[in-house]
Amino acid sequence: MSAGVFTVGTRGSQLAMTQTRWAADAVTRASGVAHEVVTVRTEGDVLTGPLSQLGGTGVFATALRSRVLDGDVDLAVHSLKDLPTSDVEGLVVAALPEREDPRDALCARDGLTLEELPEGAAVGTGSPRRVAQLRALRPDLRIVDIRGNVGTRLNRVAPADPGDPGDLDAVVLAASGLIRLGLEGRITQYLDPHLMLPAPGQGALALEVRADLDPDTELARGLAAVDHLPTRLAVTAERTVLATLEAGCAAPVGTYARLVDGVLELEVVVADPDGSEVMRHAASLPGADLEGAAALGAHVAQELLGNGAGRLARLSL
Image (tube, rainbow, N blue to C red; front, side, top):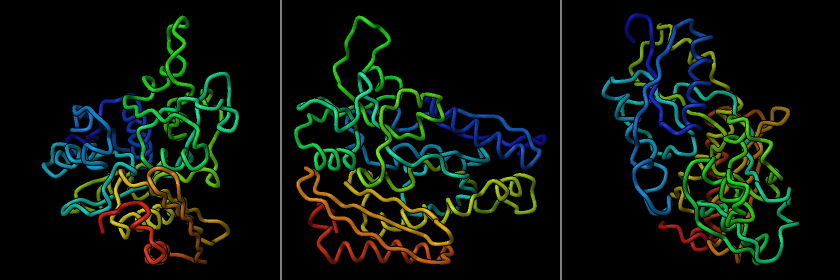
């Protein structure tokens, strides 16, 4: 920090900027220290093609992490689902603010739900996890691979030009991003976990700093104040599943953990990429701490592996 101001690194998309400002404002309120936002161009913003073929989660995180390690910025804000599960030496996720709605959301023409979409409807998504679960639920749908920011994807269904009918009947996006952008009105159906399990960490933001940050600084105290333990417990279980399965964003793996009356509940789905077979497993742990949350995630993942999840999801184990 310099002159009583901490700097925050972020990607330049509208969603990333919105999320970063929200997180940085929370830290400023808790710490009393002002902030400045620094835009960082990442590999995922430059490369084209399906995200699952571009190196997965790391393409959005590496450049931001480098800027923190180099001391160019004090803090990076990531969508947690974009962070690889392996630790980076010299960095630590100092805060996980309270998670936004982790569910996936259907944004369809004419207010349709997933069940109401006509046979053969075209549905856009860039996520193999969503593709597999959509195909399991509705094998008749035509799944279209899409990329781009939230507005670009929504315009494939309802373009800004009312004379253009669009080429998709629906898209599936993270509800959290739509809510943060004030676009929840475009959601025609929240896809509950019994229909579609979200990505590990979906809806959560990770505030990452250098591991040697002095814990007695105002910034460190502000980060500690915005850290949300129920969120940290839930995403620890979810990301441990992903790490144990040695899977990334290209794998059709969904997770959902939550703390209910002191009990940490975890549900996981592993699917064949074509949706022809789906394997689910659930477990819970009363009174979980962080170590227990990690153990719960590892246990569920090992149970799935023992039942053939690696073969099913075509994981490279």
